[in-house]
Length: 322
Image (cartoon, rainbow, N blue to C red; front, top):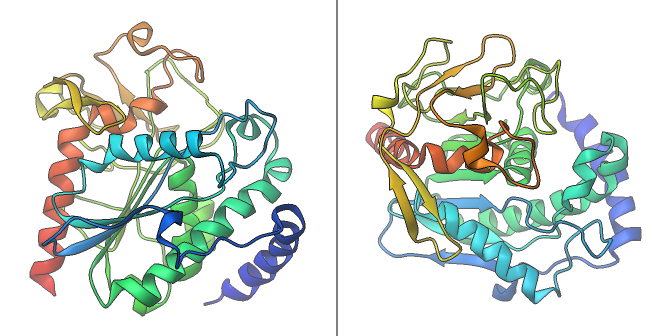
């Protein structure tokens, strides 16, 4: 609780900016404002998953419009690319939200903050609606990739020092966003995963080549904290590609278009804390958004089967202990 007053004051100030900029509040009692809502049947847990950045701001906008139906299709598509990791174990909940557009990540934190606060305000409102109206005491997986992971971390910071939230948490998969020692010092209730089956913890990593030394996700000079999804170790020992149960490359329908067992081994860089993938050629995974060797877009794809199995292991561990 020691940081809540400061957090709430900051949030109130940001909310004033949100109100001026956005003008409206999203109604999450309206199912049309959800990409997934209680999707699935017969699952033992719930998943609250936050979409990564899909709006590249090509129209000059700084937040995604909730009226942009084409962008919302991409939003659902991006979620579908990840859903196979979780859907065997949980009902799916994913709100549409006015995410911050990609170009702002190349600017300063001060410049992005008003627009990030709009995104977080929506996700926060959706999460509160879900907890008050849908959760009903069920165990919860929290997940997000990239901006989704950033916003999931903000939810963890604000809410999960309270037992009514933390006691339900199977794990938070905050993949593709940095988590620093300063974050953990400021919010001491945050716990990073230390093994394969601990619960109530954060699972995080950021993948790059051995030669990479900086990105907009983990800038040069910043050390992130993570875990290796191949051996579930927080140490820097190398995990051989034989431990990689399968890289899966998915499309916007969620279908696996290609699966490659034992694609790459990896180790955690002792200085940057990033996950170094050693058996892939950067040129084979080149894209227009990130420099070659920054495998941000492949975080889920390279380690898909290992993550899928880990969701099962942590869910079973939580249920066994309850």
